[in-house]
Image (cartoon, rainbow, N blue to C red; front, side, top):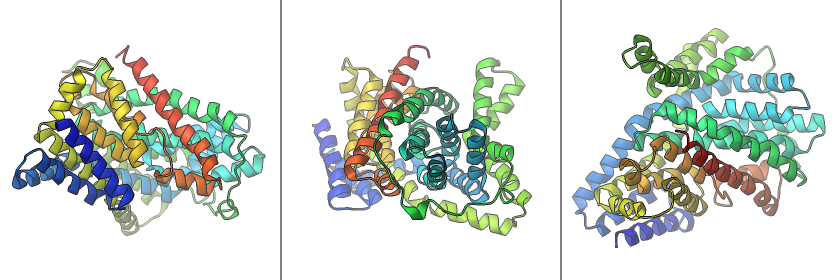
Length: 438
């Protein structure tokens, strides 16, 4: 019966989002109430459970997502992302153009949300393809693969950050393990796959080719741009390495541990970028603060969506359904990592949103992680890989790619969907291999 309640609840969620076209946050709250009542919880207890789920999920995430949006806005508006891109393309040359765009996509993708990174990078991809005569997909897929992988695998992106918090996983280890798994996933799903898919003809819409960018004088320097965009990753990574190499009572490790705390690292990064990409460039503090305010407004719906998923997770836990499913899954001979990946894959295919698929899966699989059946950092990555699988017509990224590359739906399925599926499969393989060593 508990398993049937979850299945019916997820079906109701899909029906409300896909068929009725309800707002995702409203859908999550309605389904959370329905599942709670079906579990036998009194209405007042159901409301308290939903409130606790939203509060527990967002208490940590509000800071991370807010600071992440602010940093992304500074990197975008200042021209830092454009500077990083142009310098890497210039340094690597035509022969290694894919590697340049892949690295740029990774660097930009770490600090920017997927959609923002896409809009920043796509004019450059079109310009590079037009000026070199190379097939558009050959140039574009490595960059898109890198953006997608960072979105699905790495904090401070919404789903990986939320799942890391749910599982009480170590943020630094998740980031380091994520980068290790991300490298082969990007290479295989970007440069390698593009050699096959580049035969499909893509023609960018003309209005997207000649978009005006900032001049070289208007952009910050390369190293300022590089360190400003990657400052949170640098701080968290240094802290994690110190945790491996230094003893617990070492004072340096303690200080680096404080600095590498995700909230502190993001705060320091925003303050650093306010100076390097704002004040040092002659911008007024009032202008910078106005931009930061707008950046947070733009992610409000993402926060509510995550909050709704957190509410459903808490209802599953408080009602005992999550424990029941965990005990049921624990009797399975399948790897817990594979189960997490599989559930996320199914939800991704049905819902479309990688964020929804990832966080909903985390709520279902939570008992296995809490019971110590698997390392939480690896489960974050397994679920992240599954949440990128099989992106199709209910995925916003699918339509962005289709329209900007001027492809038919059939050709978009052959390219975007295949690329996303490749990322999901190679990610799972990478996690399984990594699990043998950590």
